[in-house]
Length: 349
Image 1: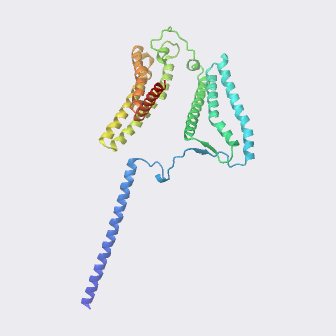
Image 2: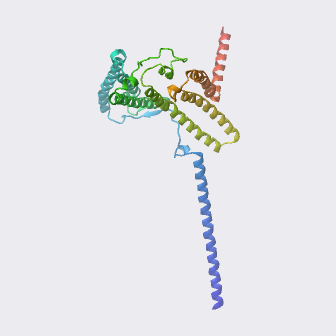
Image 3: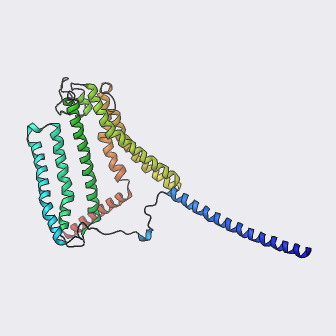
């Protein structure tokens, strides 16, 4: 019994070793698969987020968009809506145009509050012209929606965002105007009146009517004027410059991580050119306006203004257009077509 039992134990041990090896092989295979998935996930993260969760085989480039609107509603109801909304649209246009016309024509309304009201009415007129006519036309068209070209759709979206953003800024400016008029009545005339009192003559020491050069001649609270100028500088110059530098920093990080040396060199040249223009424009303007009026040198400002008046506009076509291959190709095609046309006209004559 002992030899038989020992041989049976040996068989069991061999079978156990075989099963253990099989389990180890499966575990190794699973780990290899998981490692491959991790590597692919890391590669996907490095290459950037996916444009769409749908596979590229399902992507399409539509030749036109269809604005469905209320095309699925009964025709009688759509006509009723058109009949109700058309007078409202005409009343909106008439009311806003009336406010704009009165604010421009009546001298008694040439005040900051009515300036903002006129600007808001102008924005509202443009806003409704962009959206409402097409919406009203959709009520009268047959079922199936309105066909819109992609360029028209993009233009409508851009105008909608631009006009809507302008309206938000105007409403904020009107709120600030009311705050200053009610809570700071003594400072309100100096801040919001377009006709500043001047007590230092009328000689503007600049090449154009620049804000610091004109404010130096004005009377009133100099500290208040400097604070307003500083806030405007932060909103219009420093914040956009920060966003530009942040964007190009991200671009440089991506360039360093992908591509070969030649591609990186070309990309760096393009980024350096764009950054040069941005730094020249925003850097010069920030250095001129983000400082107290008492410490500013108008002679230096005149020299600096030569850069962003003459040099920066010259760099725009040189960097953004003439160095662009697509623009170069378009320019060559336009010149060749013009040459061929002149030659053909010469043959006819």
